[in-house]
Image (cartoon, rainbow, N blue to C red; front, top):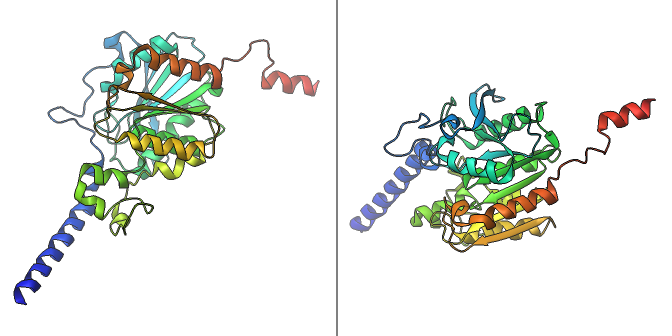
Length: 316
């Protein structure tokens, strides 16, 4: 009996220790601002790729200083403007080659935000904080006079899709449309994907069995609970060879969104992996986005009077 008691105490101790580690270090497990072997600094800037850009410094609503790049296809380009939210690991500089092609193919502006704790931005990443950072970026774009603020599209890949979904839901009047690529249903579900033993303790409430450690997760990023509330058009891109996020996550997100939103499009790329769907998708990838923009974020008819013109005419 003593041996059994010892085993029970040992198991309990391990569980308590595991919970303590999860509480103390979960942000370091969820967010990876620095790739192994590299530094937090940007390895390159847009000028290396001969891109016309502006360094933008913002303040999040809680005072954290943020850095971003605003890249234009040409100086007086009026849109569309893509607000790009990156994947988890590394910083915005690691996405510059993709953005260079995006600008070339789509003839758009791109605003690249460094989340807090990433790149040149101050602070430490958290769901609460990054949600504020995304809002600060959108508010900045909405106040600019050199773009068409009615043509702002949010594009999020992986973690960025969770960030972008939250932002689009909270700003139906500022975000024209949303693109999600290889995004997870929630961090709760991803815990069991990355560390299989955790699926018995952490997960969405709809999954089998009680998930007794859910309350410890400070950054759940439950996109599956947000996406059904997004009213704007949504384009879903899923790489079927995704080695990080199971493609079933994107299918679940699409199903949840499409049940409430008739302006949803789902596109699969048979050879797409987590980070290279934009590359393996080739021309089909970019044509799909272009068609989505033309349908849901169209260029204004110059002959159509502006809101200001309408107001003046009404006054007269």
